[in-house]
Amino acid sequence: MKVVIIHPYDPVANYASGIRTAISGFIRAAPADWSLAVVGCTADRIARPVGVWIEARVGARSIDFLPILAAHPARRSRIPLGLSFVLQLFRRRNQLDLDDAHLIFHRLETVWPLLDLSNPKLLFLHYAVPHHVLDPRSPAVWRHFPRLYLGLEKRILARVDQVRSPTSEGIAWMSTRYPDLADRIQFLPSFADPETFDVFPESSRVALREQLTREHGIDSRAPIGLFVGRFDPQKDPLLLLQAWRALKKRDVAPVLVLIGEGNLEREMRAFVESAGLRDRVRFAGNLPADSIARWMNAADVFAMSSMIDAMSMVILEALRCGLPVVAPELGEADRLIDIPEAGRLVRDRTAEAIARAIGEVLEQPRDRALCASRAAPYTPERVFAPIFSLIGRVGGVAGQ
Image (cartoon, one colour):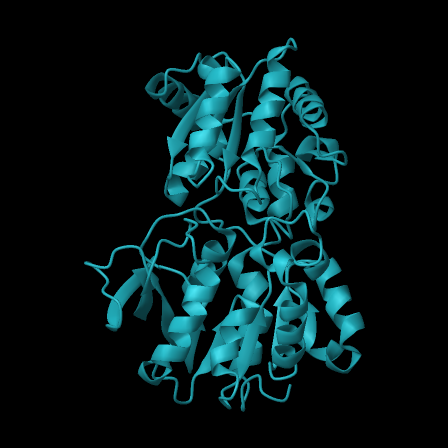
């Protein structure tokens, strides 16, 4: 079975992205006898030159990789990454070696250059159109071109064999808009990798906390809040920093550790200085998954302030590490944070509301095992099993 994943993704580069995690998890969990390839982008044009097929590794899995664009997937540029990638797909489609391959996409527009091919096509959409495209407050570029998006969507969905999305609202919207295609459009939950994200034994966790706080100049007695994600408008880390300023005025004054990078970092650092938060905020940079799991075991609360979300992978990863979560009431978060021990959902996405929820979580007793139980059903093998079965059927996904 030959499967080709087409997305502006670099399997070698380390960067924070839910779609990157989804693709990597799919590759690692896929049947061992499948031939896997990625058509993506390169964050290092010297090591992984554009237009050259190379062998790459995702965990223990070897894949074929063709970068068609030199760009870092986590950094914004003057020309949107999706547009640049689509243009390169049109230009280089004869290099792609797609004979007899099942094609997998993670953005609507990336299907367009290959729409005329007869290959079976599976599309993962990680957002709900009403929030991502039609809401003028959305940080997504598509909000400026909703008619173009809807025109592409109508044309593309009719030619895609299956659509999966981790947002039930997005599924409902598409199914209502395209009732003739409703049987092709289904919910697929997100996941967390249990081999990386798990609850450490208490003795190991205490020693790890001592080590990490010492390395980063943090008082080991202070509560630790954690954020993992891109520093961009969709994740809105500036709102989280505003919540930390509000927490500074309360009795509970945790230290916030920020893992990630992005275009807002300079503005975030300036805010930290102006708000007098230098002793309460640490920028840890981009870290690999195993280091993130270490911080999740050492921390006391995971906090996020996203404007848009579906079924957040990072929430699942935090819960699997026994870390309670404070997050806006978005997407599928209420499937996971449904008991007080797992954290709080914030209906009013304001700094004061987030600060109040963080304070409540820090004041309550910890139950790491109960937190982990909320994420336990969502592993890559369980989540992708129906997809692997679908692709593996005689004739693939076409016509299913």
